[in-house]
Image (cartoon, helix red, strand yellow):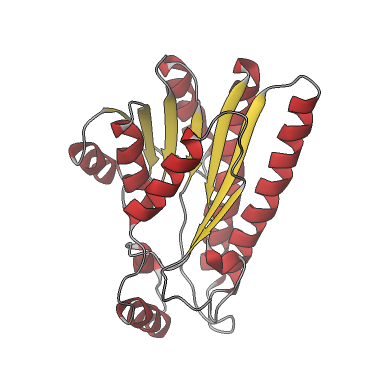
Length: 247
């Protein structure tokens, strides 16, 4: 039976790598993101069965269209919540609209898509939700307090959801697994969302100082691993860092 996976933020970086990996493994992958051209570039980068749905995780109408497409494809077996922004800046100079965008995308966006998907998983009796968090949620760093807070909230929500799903299964409910993957420094274009010039310069210098930061493909390996474990095994949390990363 063909499985369907949704990957949010699938137009670049971790989202693109995960989408390509899941398609290679035989899943129908629904690519969800704001930039249609970037999503098309993802499909052009690999082989497999892709469906493009342009939209924003903060927009209810876009999510409704995503779910309509997913149900037509057979229903969602795997959701990878990856969409995120990182317009970090020191608290005293940060712009409030950037904070709102960070909370809306990283936290509420994840909640919006999870809420839409989990109902179908319960009806079908199984599913797997994978949350792409960050080491920053456990070890906040300067200028990233709000970004770190959204990732900490994702971690907390995910563990609460995992416990809720486990309790439901124990009483005869569906088998729904929840996994949080928290990478450290990953070489992606996420730093492009940093508008504060000094913060962006420091962040890019930090990445450049590393011999080998993680790659998006490293995170895709972790996603594939947790999805392919036997149904009775739930890898609830993975923290992964470049070997040289101290915190």
